[in-house]
Image (tube, rainbow, N blue to C red; front, side, top):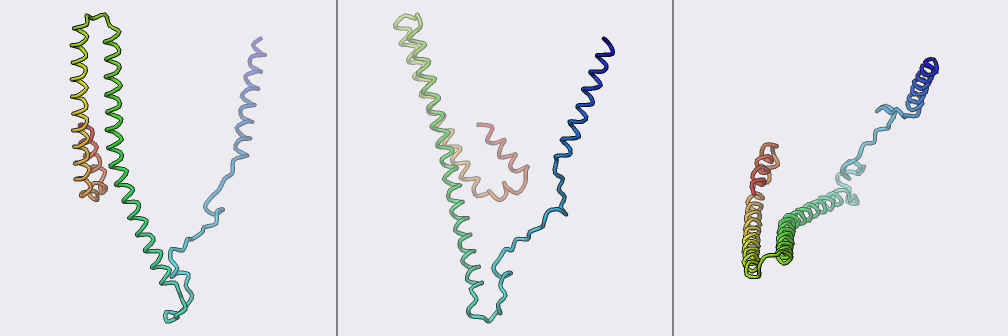
Length: 177
């Protein structure tokens, strides 16, 4: 019995080693020397073989058009980013108000299902309404504060992006509320 067990263990380890070697054989090894290096050419001026006085050359015109297009794209991206930030705060408020409404509806449902007397149920409904109103008021104030802080931080965006410690400080402030 022991001989059979040892033989099985030896065969399993042998098969495992063969399996690993097969996996290594299938792996492709690439080095930087195997891959051809392609150099991208950034501007039309590097491709230009014409003389500086050649009037038929459109290289400089093409560069100006490309530069103008890049500026437009950056402006478009900035505008979209600002809209996204405002939408982000607006979405947060909508979600928060929806959560408050759901909690209020759930509380009213539980009050209705409870065995309290009618006058006690009315007191509890008034308390739920007061809590809901306060929560909505606080959510709107928090949203307004976030919008003001976001606008103020836009002026210091370069400083915020400059160092990791600056971003961490902003995150800590955001975590407070």
